[in-house]
Image 1 (cartoon, rainbow over the protein chains, first blue to last red):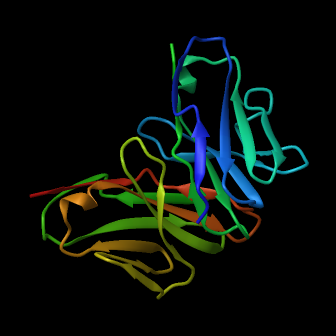
Image 2 (tube, rainbow over the protein chains, first blue to last red):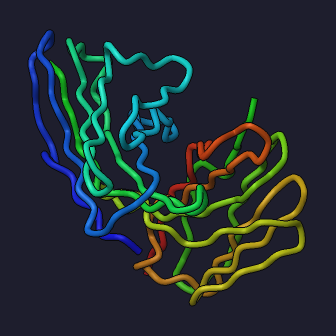
Amino acid sequence: SAVISQKPSRDICQRGTSLTIQCQVDSQVTMMFWYRQQPGQSLTLIATANQGSEATYESGFVIDKFPISRPNLTFSTLTVSNMSPEDSSIYLCSVGEGGETQYFGPGTRLLVL
Amino acid sequence: EDQVTQSPEALRLQEGESSSLNCSYTVSGLRGLFWYRQDPGKGPEFLFTLYSAGEEKEKERLKATLTKKESFLHITAPKPEDSATYLCAVQAGWGGGNKLTFGTGTQLKVEL
């Protein structure tokens, strides 16, 4: 399976600011995804990062709040904009081929004060 | 709407004490059911994919089974290193795209 890294691994941010999270894969992959894991809750898909086109967002998530880039087949970024304490969460990227098994990165732990 | 319910929320076992974790699901056409293991501070680690009722897969002390309504993760003679949160997820086959819908997990603690 692909080796996935995320930066930063954790951060503490002030409300109203923005944070960009990077996801790097060691091989070219078709599908990349961004999930959120809030404390005590299940992983929730934010969006699918499409190479060469706009990301596809799930219900309840919007591009203005979570802009995503996918400049090539090995890299994606997720920005959490205008943060509030409710955005404190673990953000995870995952990759998949053929729409089946997804492999996850180590996650980015975000605390918003 | 696809739903996944895992039980129990937490489970404490003695080393060697076998048990099962449950994952009940409702989905509009199952494309796949996935089991992951998540250790504290880490991302989910893939364990198994099951596609159709009656399918079983094994890996070391773990065995996953699937029916039309639920999946079980059987843990035989667990060791302390099996302590983790076990996550179940489903992928819908009918218009669900590639989205995984997760349960909230079962937190397993195996004690000496």
